[in-house]
Image 1 (cartoon, rainbow, N blue to C red):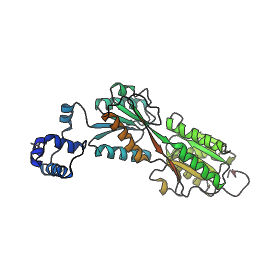
Image 2 (cartoon, rainbow, N blue to C red):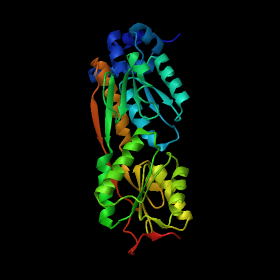
Image 3 (cartoon, one colour):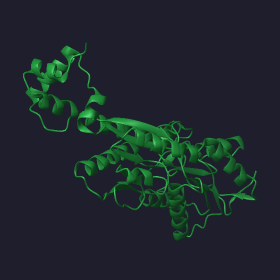
Image 4 (cartoon, rainbow, N blue to C red):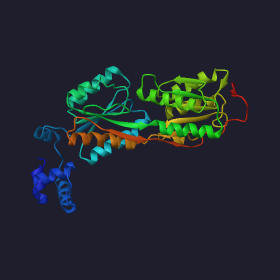
Amino acid sequence: MGHTMRDVATRAGVSKATVSRVLSKTHSIAPETERRVLDAVRQLNYHKNVHARRLATGRSDLFGLVISEITNPFFHEIIRGFQAAAWDRGFDVVLCNTEYSAQRSESVIQKLIESDVRGVAIMTSSLDRKATTELTDAGVGLVFCNSPIESLVCNVTIDYLRGISQAITHVVSLGHRCAAVIAGPEDNRTAVTIKQALVAGLRGRKLEPVAVINSNYRVDAGASAVRTLLAAPELPTVIFCGSDLIAMGAMTALESAGVVVPRDVSVIGIDDISFAFLARPPLSTIRVPREELGRIAFQALDKMMKLKRHRGADYYLGTELVIRESTAAPPNRTAHLQRR
């Protein structure tokens, strides 16, 4: 038979309440007391009974995290940051993956409600605000990215404009005068935000894009978009991409066509995923601090739940350009790069 919290308390010479506080990490405990409790936990091989806790308190130890696609490297650091912050506070995470499917998204919402989660971080645009009404109606707090705040909803604003402005200034200083944009999906809120910021920023610097192409967030989509550019009479000297995966697909297609990056065409991505510096050449990109995004998302939910606030708050996250080897001065010519 397994040991109980009372057994741990007796072994450590403290109350059950103190054991609970140490294990849930919800209160500040004297280091010596915490050490005695944790020693007793190890000696007795004690494990928390989450189901018993839910029956006793009426609340679960779960927070939800919703992403679009588990295979997309963009989400890995968000997961790590959110999960680490949750575990530091003694909570567990229900990870849900929508795969950009409306039907799957409905199942995700039902799973989260059935799991009795305390709060949910929606880190994908494939779940819109209307679809998440069921969660807020159930009293579940939510945090979104780049979305207006309202009752039971927090928002983390990612300042893409800052990094995009740095990227445009960078290519202008290199001498580029002809640009194209390969954006993300047209029905993705974040992709639209990035595309609009890129187009507006380029126009503001007298760099009207010669092409603006939408694609999905996969490598093959970036390659397909570049093949469309290659079929035109002339190619831009710099291509801005809506994600690093799109950018890496673009560089692969350019290389296959005999176009050298960055000698002939410069390429800039967005995200700074772990593979960006391993690309050949290493990718210049706009860094989004995604692990920090995960931590902030959890902290926002936790704070809202602890304070029992009916209205969420807005949080800010900056971006910045990381210059690597995929950007350089344009070829020395008076016209755009002619199609090979």
